[in-house]
Every structure is written in structure tokens, then in C-alpha cells.
Image (cartoon, rainbow, N blue to C red; front, top):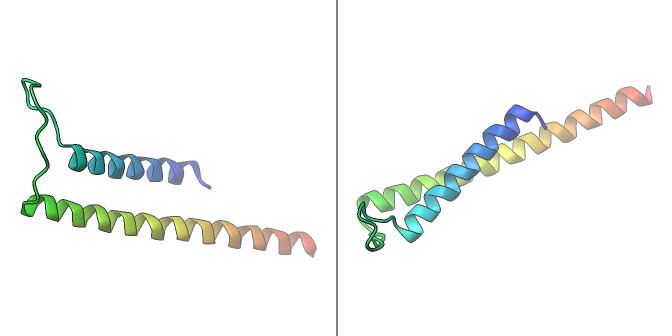
Amino acid sequence: MNQGMVFVLLIITISIIGGILKARYGHRDSNRESLVAPRDDGETLRLKEEVRALKDRLEVLERITIEKESSLNREIEQLRDR
């Protein structure tokens, strides 16, 4: 797989995991006394939907890259067989 594509997928994956962890566990106040519990307000629901959409897009990108890689391998093997 192309190193640039791996780098992009890695950044997307890290962003998604960070967003999930932040939504799941909340964040600390500036004085670090307690954790703020996540709320299911409109913004949280919108972000959850956005994460879900990003996961779907990531799955599609993975499928495309795997299909291109395997088709490229097949083409190379066909050229070798000639």
C-alpha cells in the first residue's frame, strides 16, 4: 500500500479514536477537580453521527485500497505469465 495512503488512514483512525474517547470519558475542567460527564445534547448526537459517517467512509477507503492492491497484483502476475 502507498505510504501516503497509510499515513492518511492512520491520521483518520487516530482522530476517530480520540473523538470516541473524548465523547466517552468527557474532559477535565481547567482546575482539574472532576471529570465532566458527557451529555446527550444536540451537539453530542451530531458528533456521534459524524463519527459513524467517518467510520463508514474509512471502511470504504480500506475496501477500495485492498481491491486496487489485489487487482494490481493480478495484473502483474498476468504480465509475468506472458
